[in-house]
Length: 327
Length: 309
Image 1 (tube, rainbow over the protein chains, first blue to last red):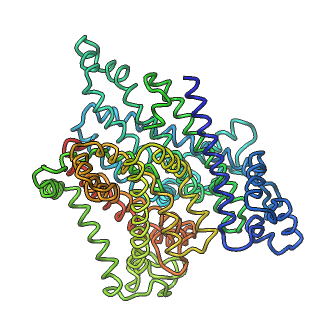
Image 2 (cartoon, each protein chain N blue to C red; image 1 turned 90 degrees about the vertical axis):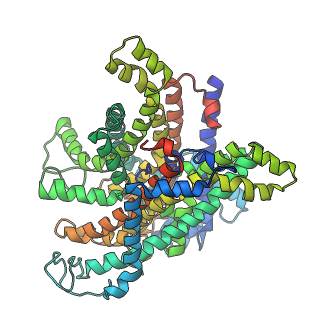
Image 3 (tube, rainbow over the protein chains, first blue to last red; image 1 turned 30 degrees about the vertical axis):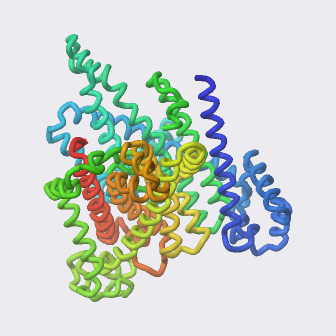
């Protein structure tokens, strides 16, 4: 058990190393001088700066040496500097990390909780109108572009009905104090989190419905019923635990997609997270920031996958980590 | 179907599609294609999907000649609502361009890019999946690590970086989508090949001396097709969402009209001019929905036992 966890962590570290190499390759595959790519357009006009970058990254040395230098720098948390902000990429990103984590975390919690509930309810009555409605909603949710869903929700909730703020994550009009702050951010969080969560709600409800239907047909559920347990107890205590396993797997697999969605949602709502930062960096041609966001997001996905795998063994002790990684 | 934000959900195909679909389709099954077709056309949702897609394709192909209005022309004052003008039935955008003309002409880019990206996804995914599944051993290990790596990259962000670093054109955009969306297909192909490679008819082919290449192509691959066809349909939907997302962020080909770009450009005015973002969005929605419905229909038709799951 411990060995398999160690192996899994080693695998995650390997993936992180691979992402670093990819970043390095991207810098080199881009047409033009790598030094220019690193400093971005705003810094490229300064020959002294370019010279300094070449020396710093060892760009005049052999390719392999450059790779090792680059990986070494990134591994110690040095993602370079943004010449637009005249600030280190690491500090820029760490300031933007929490809004993204908050957004993604809220959306995911909402989607998993509500999705599982809908899935279970519809699995208990597969032919009910609610069940058919959920199937249709899942299809609709999947087919809407997330940025458009966000805009439509803003038009409805913020413009037509004036219930919620349109964008941003803070209002100046709010009072001082922790509570007022939490309420303020919370109010701004509702629409972006709902937008991002709806797609996954659709998906998780469909997934948990399918897996619940399967579990409800299994022998041990029949046994539980036969020995006279109440339906509620059978479903929520006995069946649910097995039915959520596929949902957990998918959370890990989908985390990258979730982050991608967050990127678009942040752009729509002016949410000051990593996605918004990436979008602005593209406009400013601030490549080092863009690559830094890619690096950090990939690490987040890798960590999320690792956590899901560990969570797995808690939910289902039968699953051995090693076996799973080979599936 | 079960893809998420649709944004390059690399795992999409993985989850929605059940491995072993159409298991009865191997040699000896009685006209499996005809039975599948019969089940497909009896599925109302799937037929609606086909009609919807036919509508979108018709609008894209024939629309520009039936409705002769350049989407880049300024036809009236900006931000006029739908129904108020005869020259712009769906209203005008922030520059005074005809929204209807944009919706009609915007599909060409989306559909072309999606088709090119899907083709690339299939070539990479099937190639890698087939080799990994058929040969197993170290090749399988190495290729699956490689696939895993692409699965952890946040797809849209990676595509953004690729498009931002190189010039945004139809080619780079298709390439960027293709390069991030293949792992799902690779995993399905691999699973099918693993399942099929030791079955009797494959062993028989090996026994009579067929080469690996021939077995992969002529014996195993045709039997692995059903789940791949389903995923290819779903990949089209994903690719369209992807293209729209990139265009929305301003990373589309700036010289063409596309639905995503229209929404992105009108983003600043959507509170006053809902029509300028709503109609292009509906076009994306119906196009993706048609592919989802067709994919679901195919899935049910190939494997009737799983209906409604």
